[in-house]
Length: 301
Picture 1 (cartoon, rainbow, N blue to C red):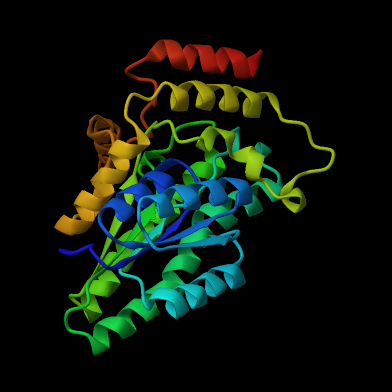
Picture 2: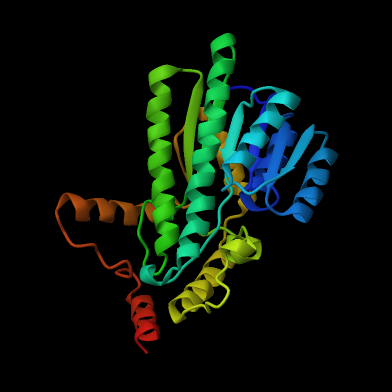
């Protein structure tokens, strides 16, 4: 996309983190902003701020795991602004613990938001964008999906989260290739952030009642994962605003992979070498063995 002025952005998870920062940038660039989020109060405040920047805003409360709600979002967007030009499938939640200790509802919740939320966004908005491109040779569109470095690595004690983020990377790479078969007017990117202070470590605050286990208590591994996540996310040096700007830079440049911490790609290279050389997975704590020792001691105590 070369032009943002006067065009429309649809952003999920828009009330906080990357979504809110992306909404701010979109407004400053003169875009119409469709802001979708599960948090009603936070969405109201965020939408008010973006309107204050002079943007035309359509706030929409939804749970991205519900396909009918994504479909309603698309209908409202089309009616208000027409087909969007930028779709940022960004909403996501975090969860950790040993992979066999995730409950059925853990799996349903995290897959529903992190993977199906993106899948529904792609399923619903891509045909709308393709239709716009077909009738307007000047139409430009772009879809950005938020994955994670956890979609390229497999850190221990983060099973369900890793699974969903790997799936989002695969979905996004396939989307990129499929779009290239049918159009030159719509691009795709995948955002793979590392630890950035966004509030994702507090995801449980938005977990629906029906996705909570009435009697289950967090296991030791889940408590440890939560503590590690709290520390890692809140101590991140990059800001959500910086990452959001890189998203817009990538859209303008038609760049597919967006990394917040390129140095973490060393771990990706090691994983690829494990695969290519038929080597067992390398110890993720190879560079900082004291962390691995501590985690093993905690889990085996």
